[in-house]
Image (tube, one colour):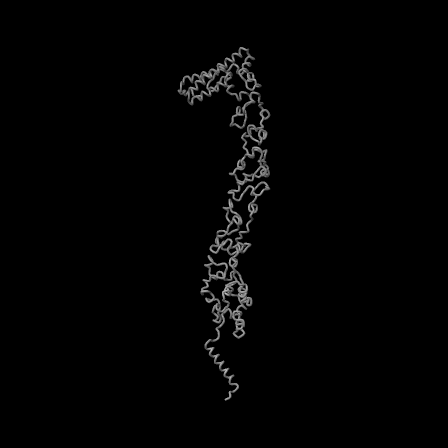
Length: 542
C-alpha cells in the first residue's frame, strides 16, 4: 500500500524525540558553572555556552578570556607552556567545569600527583631549593606584592590569589632592601639555603678589607639597622633600607676627615696603606721634601732623628702633631724650646743658635766662643783645656763661681792658707803677698819647672832658682816612695791615700811645709799598716 508522504517525517520526529529522551535519561544537562565563571557568565542559554564551546574548541574558548595564559604560550614561558611542549594543551583535564559553584577550578586535578605542596616547579630554569622548600604555596602566590589579579576583560572581578605572575627574578617576591643597581646581583651573594649572611658575598671584590678596615663594623661605613629585632624586621620590609652600595665613598677623603695640619700634594697612600695595622704610624712617605710644608724643614742633625723623637706615640694627636698655624706654636727652626728641654735651666743669656747649629749640637759643631760669649777670656793656659776640665759634666749651666783663680783652684788656694782636707798648718809665707800671676805666666800654655824657677829668681836671686829645682826633686822622691808602698798593699782603705796623694800633688809649691806634712803622714800610715794590714779607723777617716 502506498505510504502517506508525511509518514517518514512523523517517524523521524518520533525517533528524534525518543533518542533525546534516552540521552537525557542517560546523561542529563551539565551542572552549574563554578563560582568564578558564574560571575562573568550569568546566563545559561546557547549563546552563553558558545562563549567557551567555540568552533575552534573548548581550549580556544578558555584562552579567549585567559589572555595571560595565551601570552605565556605564545612566549613559550611558564608552566602551561611547559605542558604544551610536553603534549598537553587542553585546559579541561586540569580545570574541569560544570561541577557546581563550589567546585574549585584549581583542584587536586590541576597538580601532578594531586598534591600542590609536592609541586617541584619543573618549568623553572632556576630550581627552587633550600629555604624555598619549606615555604607554603601561598607565601609566594599571593597579592602581597601588589600584582594585578584580574583579567583584562573583567577588571572589576579581582581574584584572591593566582599562581601566575611570578618570575624567576628574586625581586618578584623579595623586597629590594639593597636597592642594588643590577637585579642579577642577588645570586652573586645569596643562595637559597641561607639568605643572611650572604654566603657568596666577597667584600674583596668591591673593597679589600685589610689592616684597620678588617676590624671595622659594617655600620662604620654602611647604614645598617641595630640589633633590635623590631628595627631589623622593619628593615626587611623597606626597600633600600640596606643599600650597602651607597657608602660615603671608596677614597680616603670621602670617608676620613683630613686631620693633617698642613695641606699635602700627595695621595694618602704615599704614607698610609690599607693593610696598615694603625694609620697613625703611616710615616713611610715622609721625606725632606714632604716635611718642608710643615714649616720645619729637616736639615743637618734633624735628618737622623726618628719621627717618634719629636712626635711621641704616647701623646694625643693634637699634641703629637701641633698645629703650626696656632698661636704660640714653637716648633720652628729657630725656636728650639718647642722640642728641646732647656738643659741650661735658663742660666744662659743667649738664644740656642748662638752656640748651636743643626749640623750637630755638640763638640766640633758648636759655634760657642768662650771669649765672645762669656766674660772670662781664655788665655794661653786655659785655651787648651776641655769644658769638663773646668765645668762638671753633669752641670749644664756652665756657671763658674767667679773669674778669680781661687774660684776653680780651691786646693791651691787652701794650701796657701795652710789648709788641707785632713791637716791644718801655718799659711805659706807668700799667702796674701803674691797674686797667682806673679808666679804663673798666663801667656805660656804649658808651664814647666823652668818657668817657675825663673819666676823665683825674678823676685829673689838665681840661688832660689836652684833651690826650686831641689825642692821639686825632693817632692818627687817622696811621691815615688809613697806610690811604691801603695803598690805592695791592697784594700779599700787605699782610696783615702790616693785622695791625699792627689791633694799633695796639687798643693806642691803653694805651701811646701803642708805638702811635706801630707807626704810624711801618708808614708807613716803605709809603713804602719805593713803588708795587707788594714789601716785604723782613725787613719781612714778624713
